[in-house]
Image (cartoon, rainbow, N blue to C red):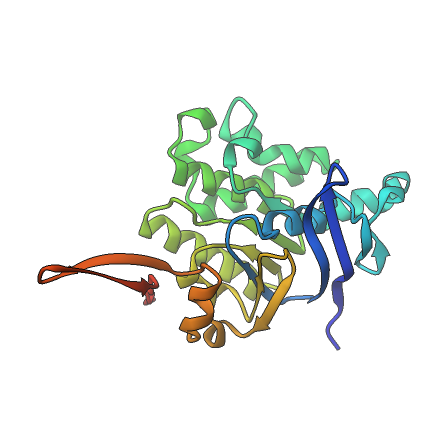
Length: 270
């Protein structure tokens, strides 16, 4: 039987105790699963990832990771905290939050060294991710000199260097060109095939069939309003439109402007 990695029961969180960001979320994430979280802006996707990464703790309900509660008391258990940081990695939506070292090489090495890995092991991790993500030409450059696509890849590399069991990704393909998107999806699928659990928050509906077995849709009340396989959610046009998950484009037909829903379906071929 597969292990439960995360278990949320009626979990909620309010910023400053007044502004609800997540409300009554029940969610179970199994080892090795591919999970996507979708929803309009402000429905709680990033807050959920922050909670799964123990950056914030629920002020209602409970969250467990690896059978242990994620709460304020977690900080008192330094062994669990260190083990947790080795097992769970979060790739932020904005790579500039993640990249702060003088060079790309330093950024990728930062995590392993912080987690007290030996220099030789950290160097081995560096070589592995640099080869996989084709980053060798960037190693001596400053992150501020990189394109957004390069920054995203380096941010992912810096988390993969920890070799986490769980990879949390906030909008990993936002603003990227098709080839860089393809590269990142291939990396994520490959990580999952080798056993890594993926949890991805995204607006990019055309990637979810590849990166998810289950999609959780967040609604305006900042809770999960639907959980289903990606193809079931994607084929429900009325639902997607009602929850602001597809673009409405205006097209000119002869002399009249006509609005209709538009979903960017891009089928990828290997």
